[in-house]
Image 1 (tube, rainbow, N blue to C red):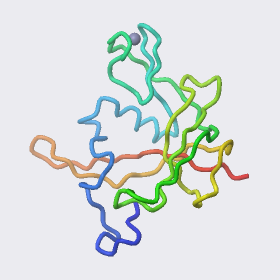
Image 2 (cartoon, protein in one colour):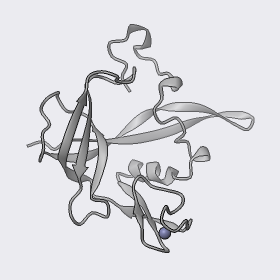
Image 3 (cartoon, rainbow, N blue to C red):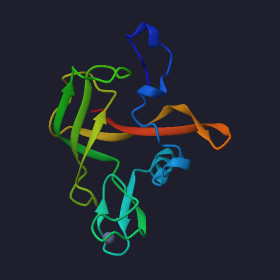
Length: 165
Ligand SMILES: [Zn+2]
């Protein structure tokens, strides 16, 4: 993640500024979500007992409390419903504006709407009805203590980006 415009952070990475610090599989029971992302699959969980679909993915069903959940695919394209550009209060390692959108994944999606960050998008260009697609990117590897050793947690995360017209 770039730290453009902040000279003392240029080219550096601070774990204390990491918005997703516990994605290492040793500490995260939904790590399969990130492994699927790495395979270009956008997924979430569905309860095999009652059928409830959750997003974000869960380790326990919020409806019936079963732990028997399965991974299901979500569409990788959707249309923008509402878009918000944040110019103030943006975390220090993120470029301004931080763009978030309420995205409609379509009638046939197991999850109709999600909120996601939108990247690769010039300010004030994204509007309602625009098509966006999933984009997966590397998050800087994060050193974590595991028993007596330090390991590097290799990770990815996702956002959406405008589909070229
Ligand atoms: Zn359930």
